[in-house]
Length: 146
Image 1: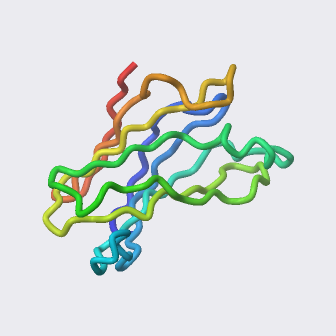
Image 2 (image 1 turned 30 degrees about the vertical axis):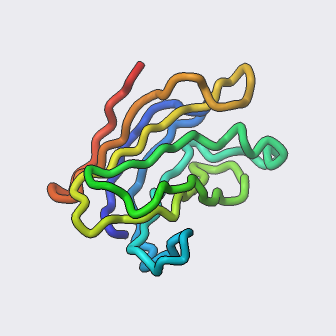
């Protein structure tokens, strides 16, 4: 982990809390414009409790919207990719978002998180909050927007 933390961002998915666990160093990642490489990272999280077996067909109902930005210009506009562990229930289900570029001079990363509307199964119209990761002070905080 580049920076480990344990921040409860609330119930962004009905019945599951989104717990941000840290940012993981991904080494260098290829720039989409074929202009070389850049340092990269991913945002690691868990859904608590874990997503039960049999929900695999509803994958998008368990994907929180994540918009990433930094306090300095990014070398390119990042896409939102990632992975989520198999749905097996239990205490938690691990997920990872990224890989995103990490400018060497960045001090603060912001992740605008938008939960899933339980009635539609799609991302809500309004963000739920902002996860602020302060690389300089080695801390992370959740700022609810609603």
